[in-house]
Amino acid sequence: MTFIREDEVLGCLQGMNPYKFEELIGFLLGKMGYSTVVTQGSQDGGVDVEAELKTPTGGNIKYVVQVKRYKDPVGPKELRALVGTKEMKRANGCIFVTTSDYTRAAFEFGQGVKMELINGNDIVRLIIDNSLIGELQAMTGQSLGITEEAQQTKEKINNLYDEKKVIDEIIELSYNGKIALALNKIDELIQSGSDNPEVYFLKALDTLAFDLGFEPQFDWYENSNHGEISSPFN
Image 1: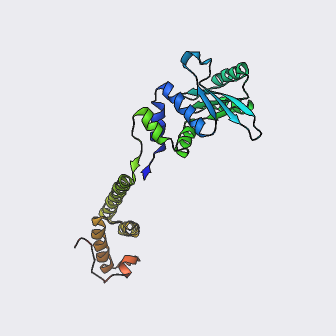
Image 2 (image 1 turned 135 degrees about the horizontal axis):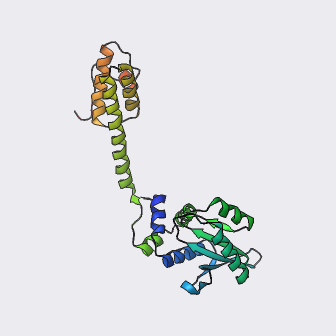
Image 3 (image 1 turned 60 degrees about the vertical axis):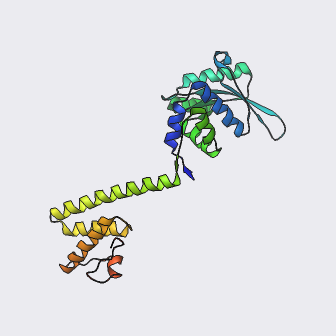
């Protein structure tokens, strides 16, 4: 199993060759049930993809699609131009696709003319939902995602790092004489089910604290013999 990071996919899309990106969107719309034709360069007349969708009654709905590999938000000017192209092409609707997002003015304009607006996050979800990660990798030459084993290793490293920060905080609290707060932090770390060897050292410290008059309420303590800390590392 492979885990896909959406931000990694979006970064890959933003770095694509513009014409390859148009081809990818055409392929994506095809997977979604449209019949598509990707136009050629400067001869496209303001249209990057022409798409048609069959209706249940057998009719065809014609769309003009503009595809922009942007990082900055799209404004209403680009949307107005697409509306003009739609009228010129006598299409029924228009779709604007960008790897970025839309300004508020553009969004409101798009709603007013019933234009479908697809932003970068939408594209990423559609690519994942339509199982097109393989096609994206083939078109860009990039490897996306990590295996389940690698993900588990990454999560374990992150957990150990987080535990180390808590341990440092416990030491600091103890050094400043805030024993009760330190014990509460020890409790949180133990209850997390950590398998960090340092946690067993903290358990030993907590047993010592019990001997000094503090009353821990930990499950691990109640289920063990007082003064004996079992460790899988023995």
